[in-house]
Amino acid sequence: MPNFEMTFMAIASKNSFLTHEEAAEVLAEFNNQTAEPRQSIEEIVLAHGLLTAEQVRIISSGAKKILGIAPAPAQGVRPGTQRIPTQPAPGQQPRPITQKIPTQPPPKPNPNEPIPGIRISGKLGVGGTATVFLADDLRANRKVALKIMHPSLAKDEKAVRRFQRESTLLVSFDHPNLVKGFSQGMMGPLPYLVMECLDGESAQETLDREKHLSEARSLEIIQEAAKAIDYMQSKKIIHRDIKPGNIYLLKDNRVKVIDLGFAQEMGTTLAPGEEETTSGTVQYMSPEQARGQLDLDVRADIYSLGATLYHMVMGETPFSGSDSVEVMAKQVMEALSSAGMKNKRISKHMHYFIERMMSKDKDLRYSTPHELVDDINEQIDGFRSLEYRPEEGGQESHIMRAMGAEEARGGPRPPTQRMQTPSTRRLAPPGGSPPSTRRIATLDDLKKRLKKK
Image 1 (cartoon, rainbow, N blue to C red):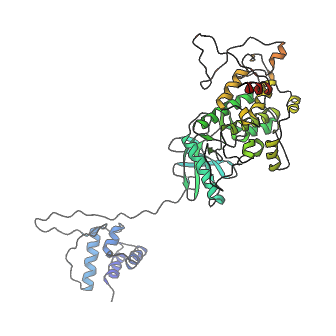
Image 2 (image 1 turned 30 degrees about the vertical axis):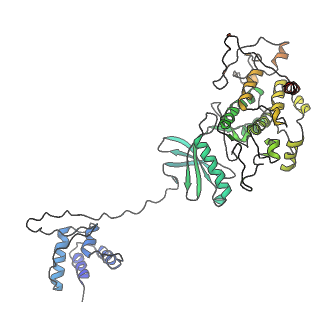
């Protein structure tokens, strides 16, 4: 004998209230219910909006007549369903009609928008630990770079910690010479970083194309990078991997330091195996890093900045070898070749800067990046020239026009007022006279001065 539900569906489909397919689906849903309380067949068709309440009343009445079922008293409304309206008892307020809203299936993930609000539009590059994508930050309405760790490193706890440490630093830091991080997080098991999108190329890419840079341009780059290192020092952080590949030259002539993957807090002693103290790039690594010393400070970054300056003006790295171990040994043991620098015809001032920045004895180096910036400005004071230089494209440099212009003119020119930036501006003493200019031509003069102290 057919039951009520089958009779109900038969009447509904025979009278074209439902298609045969709809009737079969509703009946299957009714039979497959596992949760209690179970929904009636009337409640199911109402919940899906297949029939109106009046249609349900008519069909239900006909099914009960066929089966000889007496009408049942009105029941309360189950949560999330709509009941067939009945007349309220005298003096009783009618109950509100509620209707179950069908649940929507979850939206399918968009491969171009793996992180909500960040839409990928292209690939910028692939590094050793991550892939960098060009993306749009839809909420902030700006172009960004999205850095996502390689899936192959997701289970490498050390690599994940390093990536997250870099992301945390870049998001917290804010300096015009440091790439800016906007946000960080996890995309499943992979950490990601949303950061400033830079329009330009690294100093290494420029060197690959041009072989070497002019002294004036090189000093400008070093000064700007030193300001970023000085800012990091104020936050008790050293970079530990300064090199041309991590100095970015923007098309508007700004300079940005990037990649803080090896950055470390000063004065911290890491647990064994937690991090290698020799992390970095061996061609630019300070002797104390190469020896694996734990007490690194900002002077290690100053050495790497000096090695970078050497590479830019000489067109080659300071030390080379058949493997990393040989290069690291030379960083510790061998002195720079003064003859090699002289043969390249670099100025005595450039020679001095490189010798001091790359001194094996860190006590002979600049003690802070700020001191380096000031000394570059002071050493070149009085040597600027406004003459047109075809090899420099006719653009005036705020550093200097010609290193060694003194010899070309047959004698020194009167000192000129130095063009200052906010980070290097000095106030004149109370008497109103300008500060005296300090010039040291060679490292020997520097050593004599230090011995006197």
